[in-house]
Length: 234
Image (tube, one colour):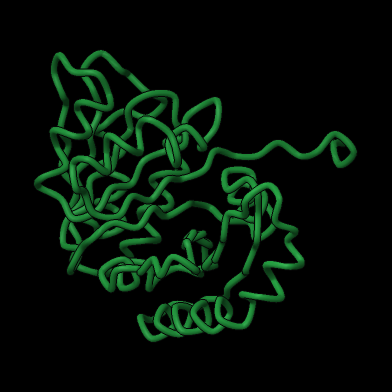
């Protein structure tokens, strides 16, 4: 079972929508409770002051994920750099994807973007596992002129073989981000691939702000394969 990392600003009372919990019921989940510290605040001091409260909140969130059908654990981190912490913990727990929470109810239709330099095979494998045997329809999206590593027909056939109803959509005359935002209103959640050079620009940068501005539901970002550290290479 693949693992999904769900970052939560735990001391800001950030909530995880029930729809996302139910969607991730087929996955292992690690809830990352983080709190960004001012530069002058030592982590030990923050931990002493807030650890008990934060752990209690994370335990409740993890229990709600387990009630939704999956397995879940949690970690608490006091950090000065949210981006680095998310990426480091994702590596440590072997997360296949990140979740960006967004308001949603029941998820009946997922938009899957295959545009750009993304790991299409990993995305399709993730979607297959995520949907499982549930009645969730999938729309595969790609911009015109982007051939990709996997054809749209082959991608749809692969999902169909797994019992998942998939349709394809080619966006004409649009950049990948604009095509994605145009297609969002008909869907309850988005799956997309991490693009080079890193996930951080999506998670915390301009793209996130634009997607959030469209009031979309949750976004699941499938990570690119990580190369082994040099010392572990053969």
